Length: 312
Image (cartoon, rainbow, N blue to C red):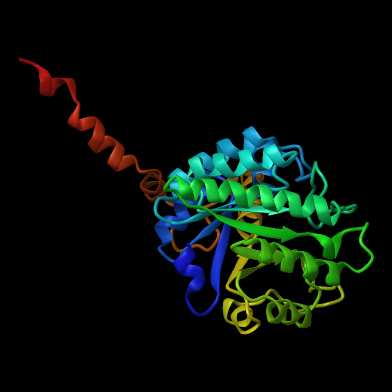
């Protein structure tokens, strides 16, 4: 993942929330890295919003399966606030490394955190934010001393926080502080303009930067702005090393399932979803779904141990 971030241009990181999504990302061969979404894990495993209800165990279990299914594709883990105090932050980094993550993001919201775009986002004060990132970086260094490696992403949600007077300037200060402490990547959530993005990237020096984007129907300032999300090329021109599409696959999956449910509920099955391979948004042909699942490989494995082969 470090090599991907160091190359010129901006890397696209799709966000996944389960092992199937991670497997599809790996099978596509189109992405150098991906991200495990805390929002997606909460909604897919609990059916609840991302407001701190998913436990560390929930996220770690999902991440273990996601990293396995992703194969050689480096995966970034959403470490939220570290799930508690500084000891919890340390544990999060160590356990995410054992699970197979290439990087972990740690943010400065109060615990329990909530989705960045939910109302009422609040951040901890500067000393607590710095202590949290320091604990994450020390855990990273401990891992490196023992022959392993993981990147630490320092994130701030000051731009959306209700308890910060100047969210943009505070976000810049915190990202600079995270960078000075040794964070591998820094980013602040929800910049409101390309000018803010450009200013942020002009002020950083050593750390890599990341932009998270969500398709919400409006632009940076809300529904009144009609500009769509930025392409990787546009993000690169603004100075970013990576852009994360946080909810694209989750939203696409939910839309497809709603469409399929509507079709199944149709009168006399007239609109039942089709398995035609040339229909956009239709079902995957069953053979292709089995291929994604690895059914043929499993059958070949079982054939090696067919009891008939051991009869004498």
